[in-house]
Length: 313
Image (cartoon, rainbow, N blue to C red):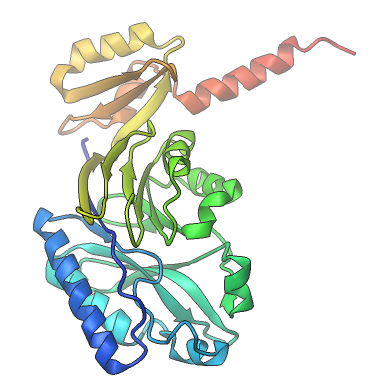
C-alpha cells in the first residue's frame, strides 16, 4: 500500500537567544519559516542542528548546562515547537540543548514532536565533536527509532554522519526515513548513505544544500540561498532489489499490477527500485507473490555461496 509522506526541511539560522528580547525575535523568525513550510501540508518538518539556543556561545559550560531545557517539561524552546507542531498538525524534529536528568551536563538532542505537540522521544547525538564534548556536551548511546503514524523514522546530528556503525545500526533497526539535523551539509555523503542503507534521508542545515534523498541516492529536493524551504513527497512503501535473477519476475509483477506498481531501473548500479501504488497490497506482498529477491537477501546468498566454493587449504 502506498505510504506517501510529505517532508519539509528548513535551511536557516538565527544565532543565539541569550536574553528574552533576542529569544522572542529569533522565535518570530522561526515561526515565519515554519508557517511557510506548513503551506505544503507536510507530515514532518525538519530543523537544523541547535536551531535555537538560550545562552550565548561564549557562555560558560555551567551556564549552558543550567539553561538547557529539562525534558519532558522543557522550557521556552520546547513550548514553542510544541505549539507549532500542534498548530500545523505536523511532526517536527528540532535540535537543541537538553539538560541531563542527573545534572552531569547537557546533550545535543533531536527532539521529535507529534501532531498534538507532544514529545514523542529524544535522540541524543551519539558522536559530538571533540570540541563539543570539551564544552560540556555529553555523547548519546545509540540509534533510536520512533514509530510515527506514517512510518519508522530516526535522527542523526551533524558529525554523526561520519560514523558508519551508527548508520548500520539504524538500518538493522528498520529505519525508513532518517532525518539529519546538521550544521554541516554532508555533500555526496548524504546520497551515498541513502543508497548504501537503502533509506530515505532528509537533511536540514543552516545555509544551502539541505537535501531530501531517496534510496537510490537521488536528490529529490535541495535548498539554496534563494530557496530555504524544500519539500518532497516520498513513498515509504518501496524496496530495492538486484537485477540478477529478478528480471522476469519483476516483468511479471508489472504485467499484473500495471499502474499500481512503479518500477525504476538504476542501470549502473544494477538494481530496481520498486514502489507500491496499490490501495491494498504492499511492496512486500508483491515481492513475496513473485518470489523477488531483495538486494540484501541476494548479497547474503552470494556470501553463503562463496563459502561453499572456497578452495580448501
